[in-house]
Image (cartoon, rainbow, N blue to C red; front, side):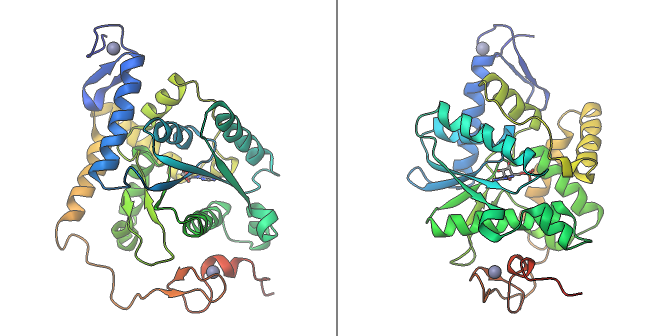
Length: 306
Ligand code: AMP
Ligand code: ZN
Ligand code: ZN
């Protein structure tokens, strides 16, 4: 297979785009494609300050790398959740530190959950038997990302979610017809409240395989293992299913997700969020919440009854 740009040997074949490229031209294409996505969806402007949430995995480190190359004003945030007796989290953090040490202008901050709030996420889960680590983890990450972005005056929080991530979530939401989640699943979530940061996913069009190729070709050292708590997670199973579909029908994964985004633009596809779902401010932390009193995050740290 030959590179479409230069005729040299291709190293990446993106069947969904009917495009094969050599390493050099793939890297160039990938960066340009991300820039087009950012601009087309008005994710942020050239002079905005953007917070990139980095996990130490391939997607978020690749995103950080691309945004730095594009010259955006970037700060990164690593949240130390204390996973696997801190082993997994420490190893992830090392990847973030190494990445930053290798690059000029790559600044990051760390929020250590246990140090800041008193307990790590697995400790919290043990205390709240019946709550899954992954759902607690998601809640904690969302809260901290939002807090850091608002306090720091960032225009947006960017995460490394790729098309495979988004398609798997869509699949799950459709299987259960979770219309509330469906209406909120988008590559750009606007700030609908002064204390709610805009959330953007600049890689939402990129196949996971291609973000991995990007990280590999750029020599990014990332944490290869999935989080130990995600082993056997349904989201991984859904990704496998969608990949089987993709193998039979080129571009099916992309079609599934991008057509959803198109459909949701049509009036009446999903009804507007219910009136009366008004946001108030959490009496503890001030972040917006639909619950009366404290937000779900702040309630986590109260001593459980019984
Ligand atoms: P995940 O939910 O683990 O698939 O991660 C999705 C995205 O959330 C990643 O691409 C990162 O942008 C962000 N993220 C995940 N874990 C962390 C973390 N520990 N600290 C900061 N950002 C994270
Ligand atoms: Zn080429
Ligand atoms: Zn709160």
